[in-house]
Each structure stands twice: as C-alpha cells, then as structure tokens.
Length: 173
Image 1 (cartoon, one colour):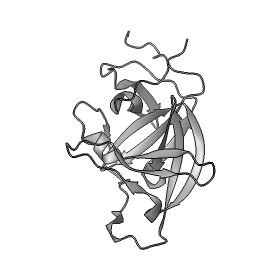
Image 2 (cartoon, one colour):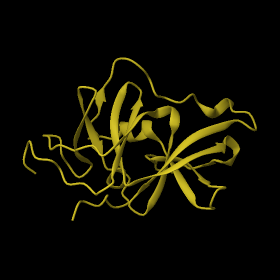
Image 3 (cartoon, one colour):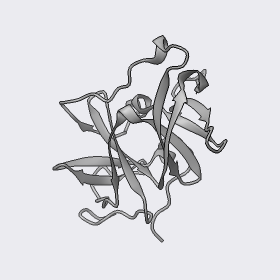
Image 4 (cartoon, helix red, strand yellow):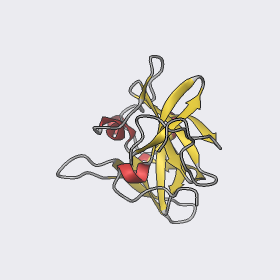
C-alpha cells in the first residue's frame, strides 16, 4: 500500500461511523440491510468463557427469519491495535440493559459484511456514509483498511470481518 493512494474497496461499500466511549471508528459494510426494532428479551446474550467475545447478542429477525449478531462496539474498541479517532464531545455508549423491562425495545441497524449479517445499536451510530473514499495511511493493516475523511477529520476504516476472525470484506476486482 502506497501512502496517498486510495485503498481498494468493493463497489457499493459503505461506512458506519461509530462513536463509543469518546472514540470514533468507521466500520466497513457491503450493504445496508435495513432497520429492525427488537424486544430486549428477544436478544440472546452471548458470552465466552475465555472472554474477548465481540458480539453481545444474537437475534432472529421477525421480518425474514434470518439471524443477525449484535456487534459489541465497546469490545471492538478495547482490542489491541484497533485505531480510533479520539473525540472530545459526545458519547455513543448505549445505556446498560441490565434494568430493561419486558417490552423494552432496542433499535438496530442491519448491515451485511461479506456473507455475514451484523447489527449495530442505532444509538452508537453517528452517521452512515455511502460512497466514501478510503485513503491509505500509516495505520493500514489487515484490520484497518485505511482512513476516511469526514467533517474535517481522518477516521480509521475498520474491517469487522477481519477484526472478528470471520474472513475479510472483498476488495475491488
């Protein structure tokens, strides 16, 4: 990868800007699949005995019966080597659902990354950016495909499939 050159990306790919705990990343996705409102009790919590799980829950979409995994954005940002823009104002952390009552709903944005459907809590999304250019930068790695320009800032563009060990998003042919 050469500095100043545009990094390869798939046609139609978009970036979800996530702001969590005062840090912002751009999460690459191949397609926006829609919005879904899910009852908190319909979210099946996920955990790993070893820790480090990057999905907080999964759920079955009532619209079409497909299963989606809910990204744990704070867990993604805690991983070593994940670059993020530090932001002073705002905090996208969703309030803990420990006090959720039956019937409480959570709004989710559904995206497709390669063959995998993922969900992101809407409260963590600062913006959805279609047709952005990903630029090369010194922080480029398998996880970080480059940076995007938004609102005068350079924000790392993260490949969620590489980050979660499920493959990688396709490049332009």
